[in-house]
Image 1 (cartoon, rainbow, N blue to C red):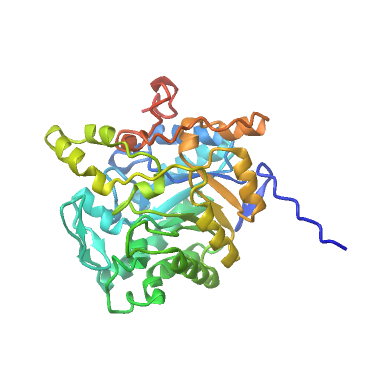
Image 2 (cartoon, rainbow, N blue to C red; image 1 turned 30 degrees about the vertical axis):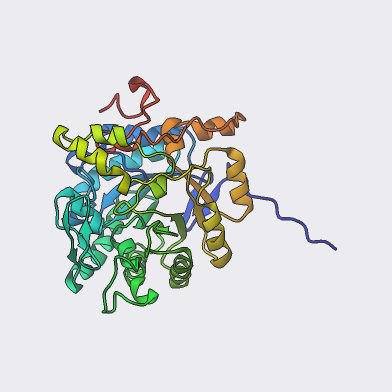
Length: 401
């Protein structure tokens, strides 16, 4: 008899992510909010996430939170220490009251931190174009401290009521930089072979799992490609995914690409908003930025679900639940991804434009999301991330700012 074709999962039905039950398969992706001045949870930050929780997502992700002061990748990021605990508890209480689960993205910016005025840590001495100086190679003491900081931050997140932590292993941040053959030129146990280059990410994941056990879900955001010559490519990324799967430290992988350090538009796709970014610079630097921006901010054609082709290769190679990310704008694309075996979808810009998109789709209005992927939201991250097409009075969080 012919084998029956399995029924694809309903995107709006409850689903499990490790030890956590989510009300559906939609995750608000981690996108830096720029709403934590002095690194404190604010009413504006809570309102921003409460809007997408009320709008129907299964889980929303607080981004980007550093595990240590030298791991901050931008001004005013939250550092997850005991002093942050009360604000983080206020955040999770508000998200839970709105019906969604709460996740927190934990990371160490590594070389990206050089753009904040710090020296920046990297696997090897590397020139930072944002800071116009060289980073410092991380030594054994640095790495031991940072691994411990990830474990401590995850425990603080669990105590604050988060349902999940997302470990940032992408975008040129420290674990991602160690994975990169271009950035990691070490000859010790942290460099050379893929197993050595993956050691930091794997050690962080197993350390976090040991600290939090089954109290919350553990995800890792993993680059499939760095988008730069000599960087991490898909075959090595698949091998890293297999190692993380075998280690048992994570409950799911969220698949991404690009580098905040070297090639950010590989993540966003479409035209870079050079004029808007230039306007955010002090006046004396604007012309210089305009003249040099194209070297750093490349243009890639936007296509919906642009990470799907590479993500399919990871899906075929590992058994871990996978979260599909990358320009998802249509409900039929979500259904297709779930039918192909992806466990969840993560959405960023579409929910910035329409915080209630998931509820709209669930009501039966399955028209495409209104996000145009113009990328003009990107320059707003330092003054409160928002969609420039939404009038100020209608932006979640801004009335509370």
